[in-house]
Image 1 (cartoon, rainbow, N blue to C red):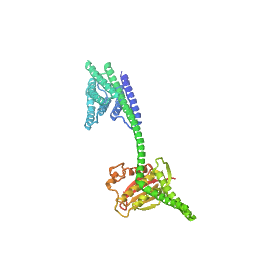
Image 2: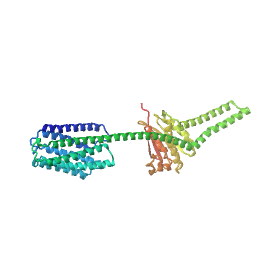
Image 3: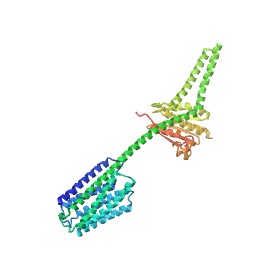
Image 4: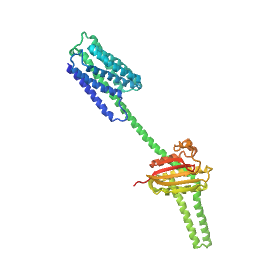
Length: 480
């Protein structure tokens, strides 16, 4: 009889151990969602208790006065029940510190209480004591599971609630069998078969409750994975939308820059075109009079060729800067790039009587999108021109520098204007910040930062030594 009962406990312990190992290995493969420590702790303690209880039955000599290992095993069963109860309580909210301390204290009290029953009580009293505690805890657990299922339905929690209800019924039935017993049990062989059956059945259902707990965690993992996949798809969609928005903003910025520079560009193109027109009229008059000399012909043709090249250079710079087509990354000389932007801004610089100080000392090549970096320089220079035109300081000075630094090239654009207030500096590179919009830099500087960052560099602001604004742009150079 003892061997058979011990075998039942060992089988249940092995099943629960297998469940524990399976959950543990699955838990290690999951980085986002961890199993609740309360039910994991309950399962661990239950496995140990089953093995100790099964081993205790094998060496049991007197059921009325069993060995101390029965106190250990029953104490562990009590702790396992507490952990499972705390798990169910945690489903409805966090466990308060007083409740945790209360259960720890109850476990500490349980050990000497059961030890007293082991030494001075009998089998019926100890079993009734355990069944009574089980009835209290199972009833409490069912109440909390019902409350959780009312707020958030779950099939696995439903299985756990049913399993707990069956454990409650078995605990009550064990008490009823003990109450109906007419003699004192002193030997294992005297234990009623129905009582043994109910005890083993209760432990089997308890094992099923741990399986339901594992299923509940797996259910949450599946929901979390589905939610994560949905969020990843949403993030991917938002990134695509973001790139489309940035492309639109780049085009809008180009259009805005084109409008702001249209008068200066027209003036710049009118100069070579007007000169060409005068030279052509002069050439026509001389040809009609028939007194065009070879020297005059050569001078007029040379002037026409120079004016044509000048206009062509302006148009070529504009085409690369304001083209709507995609321009790939290419190897460029930053000095040449700065000079091409200055050709566009030259008329406005001259109109505002701004002195330009160039210190272009870089010799490294950079691998960038020409049109986008031209936009960055154009925005920074336009901001400087605007600040200088609004400043009463004299002289109006725009300083542009390029320096080779470890890993790349530093570009510096500084002016001697009124500078940027500390309140605006805090939001200088934010998209359409209200403080930036008043200074006309809400879109331009945000795009500058986006473009430079996308090229692996950075843009920084600091007050210029001359009291104005100073922007430093770092762009990585070509390696190897």
